[in-house]
Amino acid sequence: MRSNGILGAALLACMAGVPAHAQDAQRSVSSTNAAFEQGQASGLSPQTASEYLLCHALWQRWELVLAGMASPGFSNGLHSALNDPRKAAKAARYWLKRARTYASGEDMAAAQEKADRDYAAYIQNDPGRETALPWNLGTCIPGQGRK
Image: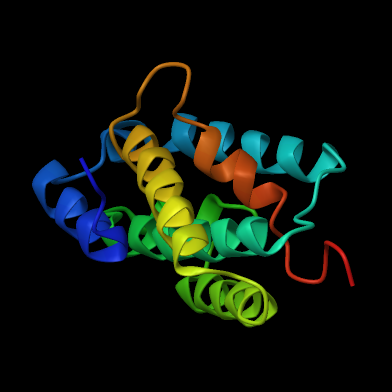
């Protein structure tokens, strides 16, 4: 099945209702921050146009997470890089701008599909994959990657 990118993710968010994480905000904030910090500490950063596009798509999905959270306590407890939808939008634009010169439509489709999978795992609290989104975001800090 082919993903519809951000539209598909938004539809998934509406169908999912309140994210499973909202039921246990403190655990979620802790695990989200820990995964993000582990991603940062990994030393990995995007190096190719397809990785730039993935970072773009992941930050778009993070905007959806923040928009869908019912608890202001959730976003207030997040790492400073994750707690504001405006920061997520700015990061998404940064990575898209980096990718534009080199990326293909196929790269964009693949990035959108991967971001949709990570977003769905996070929202549905999928055991073993629920921290993939924040971990990957930790590797997608604007200013990192090949210059």
